Length: 199
Image 1 (cartoon, one colour):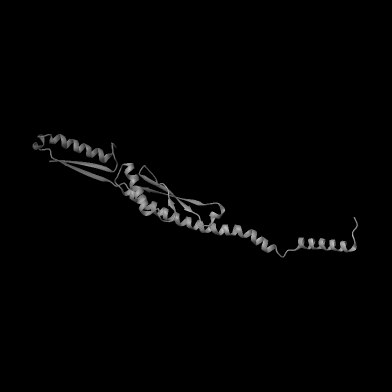
Image 2: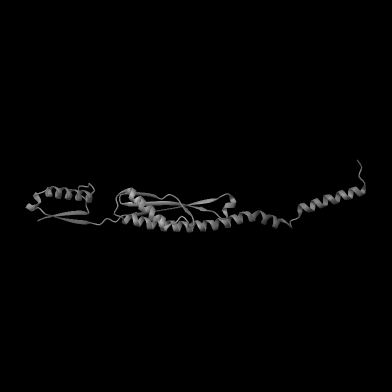
């Protein structure tokens, strides 16, 4: 195949243009910015979503604090009743309609310590674009129940009138039941004292 001088000049011109295009740097900034703007937006969105998550955790912690104090101050001893009490307090302090959907409240009581934990599910605003649709926020709290000393004086009637109609037997049974309830079956409770006053 033969090339004329004219064709050779055109070919050289095309090669020149290709070389110039390869060495051009004028559009690099726009290209780099276009590539970098995506992670920048996601980073900014993550900051927004994490700020919302921090707000939810604060509200969650305050609700758990109020609930733990209520359970710790309660005189109830049945776990199911305490669990119901805790759930009611938590629901009142963290309504489901507020930011973040609260999950199941976990309650445990051991050695006079009330432990509570809960999670809340938060829908993301910006991180949703990266495929992260929700964030789980968790908080927990512990409260030690105050133990105060108690002194009980039983003033019991042991006169002759108690010998009729089974009164003295009922008195003994009532006194025994009271002691069993207050001691909780413990033989020598350190913070509980009894006094007996017959008349």
